Image (cartoon, rainbow, N blue to C red; front, side):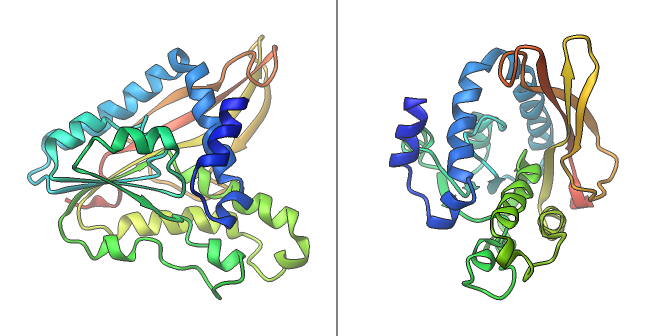
Length: 261
């Protein structure tokens, strides 16, 4: 807890990033990932393997972009740095441990970006969503885009903000959280390079007997095409959220989302 608090205090983050809970979530994910490194290893290995398979078949490797780079656990960074001239890591929060690691990688650039595009809208600084990827979409040298387990993370901060600000919530579409997910899918489909989509799509909470306590659609009803493969990720093993409960996320992978070649 003290380490998480220290990270929250020293990490550069804007006011809305903090208000939406993105900084707190990032530090909590950092700590949870350390606690459950072994339990999460298979999930990370599957993510790495998907990206590696796609990279091996690419005819050109100029620039790779990782959207939702977070703690850079979901992508094979060494492989990307070895194979591409540039690697862009894009997220709303880059914790100090990540910044320190990347300081020694000359090919890597950290880009701080609201990938939902709605922070300014919620804060009253714009009248609609701002395209968060316009500059990247215009970059013809981007040969690979990886959306790294961030799709499900676009909805809950908006949901929480709308619930906490009911006097302002009426000014926004009631389905704004789901729209944030749909908008990101649209953004991905606009890239000319190869797009890999990795995302957890469902959360299932179970007791030790295997009975389902709760099931949550992390896509908020947004439809997705059939994935190339899927697997279970024990996000919260027994003992994390309760001695007799575990939360497992279903993760799906698309090696060529949108059909770009």
